[in-house]
Image 1 (cartoon, rainbow, N blue to C red):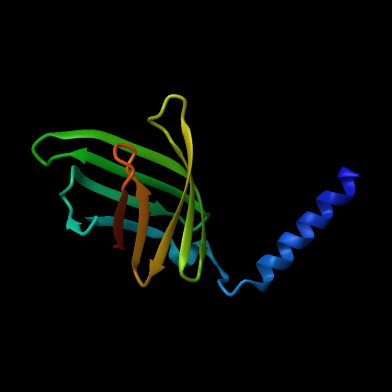
Image 2: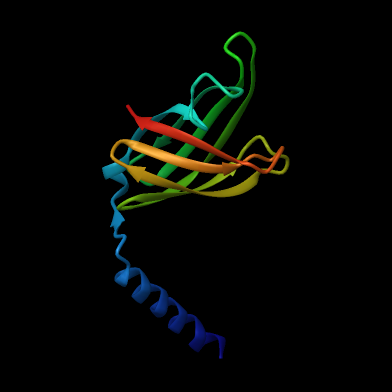
Length: 137
């Protein structure tokens, strides 16, 4: 029975993907370094963030590095690596946060508009949304 369900589920997923208005985009088309410019509307460095970068390569590999603290006293460096999938107006990052013990899998959706990526994250401290805007260099 399981043998019949899996091919049908794969076929259904392929059909849904083919019908999507938001077409897949080649990783090479969005590859590059995206530098963190604002956090929740404040220019970086601000809001406890010194700097950040999302690196996307043509093979679909991705990384996100964010330096917390202040310019005078940098704090923790958050590093996550993994893969990404790009669509016309969005990007999904499937990353592993390397500083967590054990390493934690995260999946973040980012809006793509021109040379910008907008990532909306949940602040673990207070649960509010944190909006990070990255610009392609």
